[in-house]
Length: 516
Ligand SMILES: Cc1cc2nc3c(=O)[nH]c(=O)nc-3n(C[C@H](O)[C@H](O)[C@H](O)COP(=O)(O)OP(=O)(O)OC[C@H]3O[C@@H](n4cnc5c(N)ncnc54)[C@H](O)[C@@H]3O)c2cc1C
Ligand SMILES: *[C@@H]1O[C@H](CO)[C@@H](O)[C@H](O)[C@H]1NC(C)=O
Ligand SMILES: *[C@@H]1O[C@H](CO)[C@@H](O)[C@H](O)[C@H]1NC(C)=O
Ligand SMILES: *[C@@H]1O[C@H](CO)[C@@H](O)[C@H](O)[C@H]1NC(C)=O
Ligand SMILES: *[C@@H]1O[C@H](CO)[C@@H](O)[C@H](O)[C@H]1NC(C)=O
Ligand SMILES: *[C@@H]1O[C@H](CO)[C@@H](O)[C@H](O)[C@H]1NC(C)=O
Ligand SMILES: *[C@@H]1O[C@H](CO)[C@@H](O)[C@H](O)[C@H]1NC(C)=O
Ligand SMILES: *[C@@H]1O[C@H](CO)[C@@H](O)[C@H](O)[C@H]1NC(C)=O
Image (cartoon, rainbow, N blue to C red; front, side, top):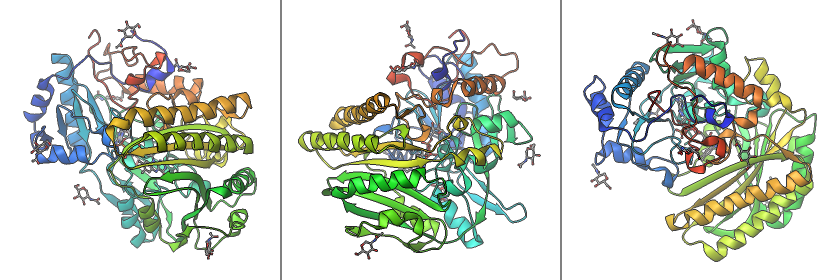
């Protein structure tokens, strides 16, 4: 029953049977959280579905439960575990901001979605300088709360993105070069475990769980509060500059020099990306410059500034909340993210551009409606490692890398469901093509960033065998409803070891009876 395939960790705490029985929703409706349960046809149910970032992720669960407190979450978990033991199957999914564009990752068909919607406040304690943030807060609201207090956290770059999933997958903020990954800025997680207990996980209490939560997403429990380190809030100099596509090579060279500079200014964040949109159908290259001190046109970006033919430029001194609003996105389209990593290498960057062009040409011929393609290059810095180790470590396996590399994200969005296959297929072709080139040129890096990974990608295995063993040990420890429960924590129900695409919902918490 137990099978040790790394990817399996990505799927289950609890093993699962097939379809959720209505009795699971009935049990919730018969409990003290009855008023928090909403069914198909209801306004709250519709609103929950409509608020998923990705249009194709709006799966219809049997019911949605919207807890207000950690105690509510505990009650819900206990009811579902008990009901599962009695009736055979109460499969559930957890949702915070709902921004991961993988159907089944943050919701579920024939099951229960625990939608943390109402758990969205941010509070600040001046003595400890810690911000306590509830999982379904959106980063824009976090910044709006902290800025008037003169404080800031290393959170998401887009205002609409949720806190919950972002922090469990790592989290790259504009402040990352300065303070490391966002997950490493968490000093304490409040977590509801499989047995319903509400625990703290921090450097001194449940230290192994604390480390595992930083990168392994939802495989250990439901996080009900994130306590984060803060720092002084200052205006940033930042925005997005758009250039003609003909300047791509200059930008790639500048990116390579910027990314491999050992003395890089830790205040300088950067994303270089190519983009095409039917809304303004010109092929362009963009740079998002975000300097985390109030310095106009800082020297750190000097080589980029050599290009003086920009098409538009939104850079200015502005607070983080304003920068995040510019990065915010609506929830109207169908979306695919994919990722891979490669060494800082000009030829590999150029190959990404060649394949990107092929994809655009193909889409111009085949796609309908409104659509957009962006291909983003970010520097993954070795400095993240030191920041992490000093604060209790994470599970990303970053210490294996002694040189900065490029983390790539393809981001496709489109309006027509009939084009799902076209976009999903071309997006995969793009990353497969880059991967093939990088492997041949020996510039491939095995790392996959979980928050940008697609369904068929396997980010947890990419953290390395040692981390997988560690995550399994932690899940074995905290993932059972009862101490001597025979429940299999890792099982082969989902056949992930065979890379079965349809089963890669790496974030659904599954409940099961041992022999179901
Ligand atoms: C427009 C946009 C911009 C983005 N920008 C960035 C960026 O700047 N940097 C970056 O690193 N990433 C970025 N991302 C990726 C983002 O980090 C992930 O999509 C992240 O999962 C979003 O968090 P969420 O709470 O909205 O996720 P959800 O979709 O709600 O959840 C994601 C996963 O985490 C699990 N989960 C959520 N909350 C909890 C919880 N409380 N306890 C246990 N499990 C939980 C869910 O079950 C789900 O599997 C961006 C994504 C989008 C769509
Ligand atoms: C919810 O959506 C369904 C399906 O679109 C619709 O029939 C129903 O009237 C909606 N309910 C409310 C309260 O808006
Ligand atoms: C929290 O969510 C509720 C319900 O959607 C919303 O009315 C409220 O404005 C949100 N609060 C914050 C701080 O975002
Ligand atoms: C760590 O958890 C313990 C036990 O719950 C708690 O007393 C302590 O305050 C926590 N530390 C932090 C930094 O939150
Ligand atoms: C973009 O072009 C404008 C107009 O020429 C110029 O003022 C601005 O400095 C340029 N931006 C950058 C980042 O070079
Ligand atoms: C719940 O599980 C945790 C982790 O295994 C354990 O420490 C705790 O004692 C359990 N609580 C109860 C009430 O059994
Ligand atoms: C997993 O694979 C095995 C062998 O191919 C198959 O018999 C089994 O039904 C599969 N299980 C699921 C849940 O798909
Ligand atoms: C997933 O597929 C890839 C490529 O086919 C393969 O190399 C890898 O070993 C597979 N992963 C697992 C866990 O089977």
